[in-house]
Length: 122
Image 1 (cartoon, rainbow, N blue to C red):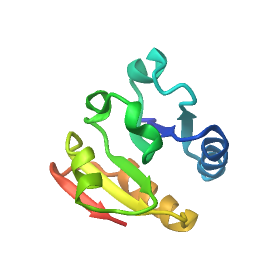
Image 2 (cartoon, rainbow, N blue to C red):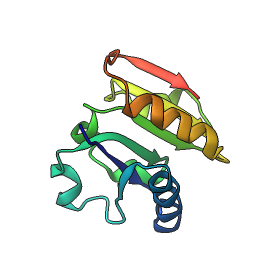
Image 3 (spheres, rainbow, N blue to C red):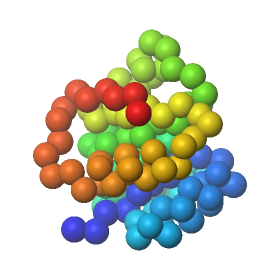
Image 4 (tube, rainbow, N blue to C red):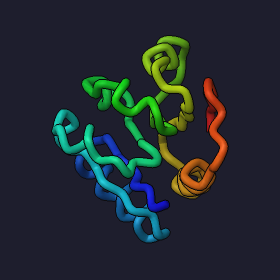
């Protein structure tokens, strides 16, 4: 089944990330207005990529059913706690390695068996 990747970050990065993902055959949508209701209702999300702290105004529970890749400048226990509603969580530290991001996206979007409670630092 086709699954879209939701990108929640600033407009410029979202466009770049979206272009890289689409060049590799992934469908992506990015949220410039992260409170837009369209983001909540789209049924085909298979993965979300969220930039921290940009994504803090997102109601996380709406996306807790899919894997989430969090892009952050640093990682500590408070940052991890912020995302505690997610059951399949993967952190990547900036500056971003796009090859590693593409490998992670491929692994997550194509996974058939999800493990609950996963927290991974990629």
